[in-house]
Length: 136
Image (cartoon, rainbow, N blue to C red):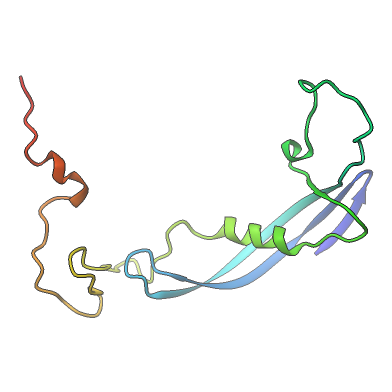
């Protein structure tokens, strides 16, 4: 990590490497994944410009500029680094591309066992449309 002071803003940049263990999106088996994150965070001292009176419609808040406010002599990077990690997580992590997932009826992991459940012919979310008739 590198921190530089540029006027009223402190820029923190660097590279973050970490390993996370999450559940497979299909079968819920634990999956370990490594994350490589390049980050750049900009901090502004809280309350620096509080004495200036600016009309509300012209006021630009530090959050709108992408600045993170801090107060005091130290900046705790942990919450912001944790947020960067969460934002870098894959939306759908799979144990393998051929993962069969869980049976929608009994919940058995279909990668490890088979079940005797009847396989639905259509997506269960569309069951309400099964008897839908279109008038011509």
